[in-house]
Length: 223
Image (tube, rainbow, N blue to C red; front, side):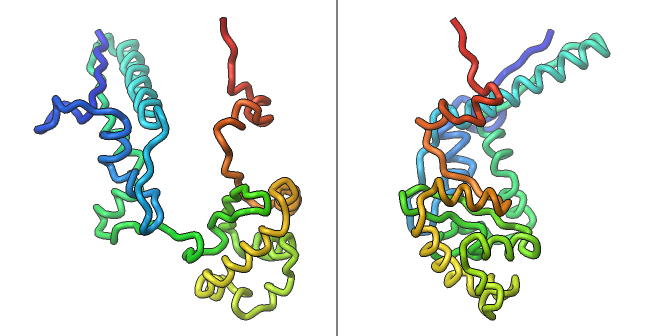
C-alpha cells in the first residue's frame, strides 16, 4: 500500500496538531510574506491557493515516485509533506543564505534599486513593466538605443557596469521618466523589437484572454 499524508506543520514537534492554511503555514511562517514587501510597507496577503497548489504537486510527485518504487521492488511506502515544508522550499534561496551566514535580504525600493536594469517601471497608461536586463555587455547598448537615449553609452555615470550600479538611483529616475512618455503597448513593441527581456505586470482578469496562454491550451473546458 502507498499511504500519503499532508499536514500543515509536519509530523513532529510541538505544533503537529496546529491547524494551518497555506496563508499561515506556507506564506507567512516561512518568511515569504515578509520577503516580498518593500521597506516600510506592510506585508501582503497571499493569493488564494498560492501555497496549496505547489504543496499538492509535491505530494503528487511523492506518490508517483512511491508507485514507481513499488513497481520495481513490490514494496509499499509512506509519502508525507506539509505546507510548512513546501513554503520553506519556495523560500529556500533566502533560507540557504541565512544558513550560510549571510545577512537577511532586505526589500528593494524601485526608486532606489541596487540595479536600475532589474526593476519595475510605470508607463504613461499606468501599466507596470518588470525589466530584467542581466546581460549588460550585450543588452545595454540595445536598451539605451530602444529607449531613445544613445547618449547614455557615452555618459561616464552610465557607460560601464560599475558606474551604472553606483548611479543606479539616478539611472532609475531617467528610465522612469522615459517610460512615462509612451503607453505600454508601444513600449512592448519597442522592447520586443530590441530583444530586451521584460514582463508586464498582468492583471488576473486579463489571464483568461491572454493569447499566449490560449495558444498553449492553458485553459481546458469541461462539461
